[in-house]
Length: 455
Image 1 (tube, rainbow, N blue to C red):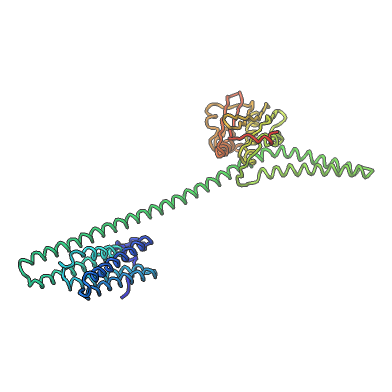
Image 2 (image 1 turned 180 degrees about the vertical axis):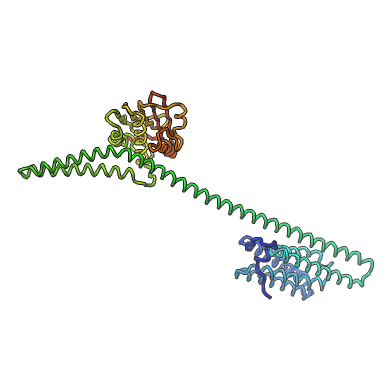
């Protein structure tokens, strides 16, 4: 007889998903079969001790059959055939119940009726609604057979018929009630499990979508940072070109000197000058390439004063001769956790904005301040330019907001700078008035430099 697959027995709802037995169900069934086997073994042992040779041979045979069914179920489950084992238990126990009812009758088994019927109905409920219905009908027919045996034994005496019918009604009602409760309990648990799994799938999908959104946000921010850097590179190109022209003029001068030199010493000196100018040109081009390269953010502990001092020559290249650029690191002895390339980009963006706000010249000052009580580093960039109105100042940190003409600004400089500073746990404060210039104050979490490095 072929065994019906568990996927078609566990849930009789059309189109419903049918999970397997599961480790917890297998463990519960193993415990149930061990308890049933122990019950029949202890019952047979107690009868042997009490009655000795007077015990009915059929009792021992049925006890052995119960043990054999339970052992067979354990073996089948051990081989990974849980559905076959459960089906074997239900069919085997119902057959033995029928034999017992047909031999002794219903009344003689009233004390052990619950122990024999409930495990069978429980396992049948795990197999599905259809197996539970068939098992309940089989158990009721076995009880009807037992009641018939009881009636035949008393020769259908009218005074005993009512008693037997009452016993039959109580047993059948109890069996149907237990089956109904098991069916609705298992169905409810199955539906709750299905809902929980659907929620789990939905949560996993939401988690994946959130991760994708976070990755997309990171990529977008990196692209905005790179766009800001490239915009600043374009504005920095004039200063770099001026340096290159100066260095190329030096090279041409040394070449002419070498050609006119009458002695080898002068030629050697000219070659040394050419080599020095070439090294300076290489450093300038390398600085420009490093600044414009698109790389992932790499925050690290930076010496704030050293970083600002190293950035000073590049900042001065942004302004023309009409703007005085003053950089004061104040010999601040503290460190910040920030990406050096991003910090250079922010400072350069502030310098470019300040230069465009001073078309007729002015002063630009970049100062550092250490606030030990708050544990913060203050980077102030102040200019004496045109300034901003209160409405513009309130929106200056918004992405793509700009007051510059089309083609002269993207509105990303301050917005991206604010995003980078916020990602590092800091903030940006902007103070400005029309005709009185602008001051941008960047506050970053900082820690004091070690004593041995502060000296």
